Image 1 (cartoon, helix red, strand yellow):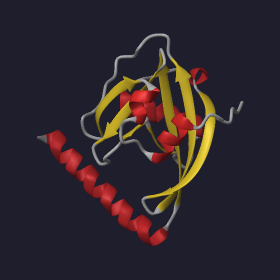
Image 2 (cartoon, one colour; image 1 turned 180 degrees about the vertical axis):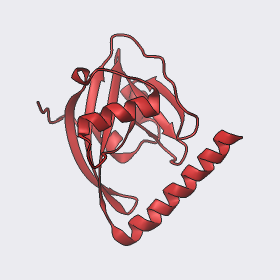
Image 3 (cartoon, rainbow, N blue to C red; image 1 turned 90 degrees about the horizontal axis):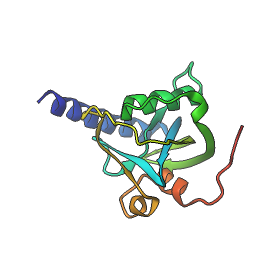
Length: 156
């Protein structure tokens, strides 16, 4: 029951954010984490969105993009990895839901599949899928772009 109330609160908060974005048209800065294991990528489903995504979220004011990526991966999937395992591979900007989303993509290849720990509040499901399987699902636009874009900008 408590999880259901949390999910309802998150849905309401997201819809209020959409109203705010409608009037303000802000640019939001965030990160996505592509966690790979044997050719499969980790997908998550947020309670307040109708499509699959990657672990990710906003970058805090005093936070680096790398720190945000590590935090979001821990919060949304329950996976902790060393900072050295992540590399930034792409950066996209897209207009969606009445705001500009400027996202930096990080990826890591894991030797073993991690145990996932989701909260069933913000994240209601998570699983690994091949890119072909993922592309047959309803995906967030930037995640889809990441999966189909053959030229990813590698940064050191």
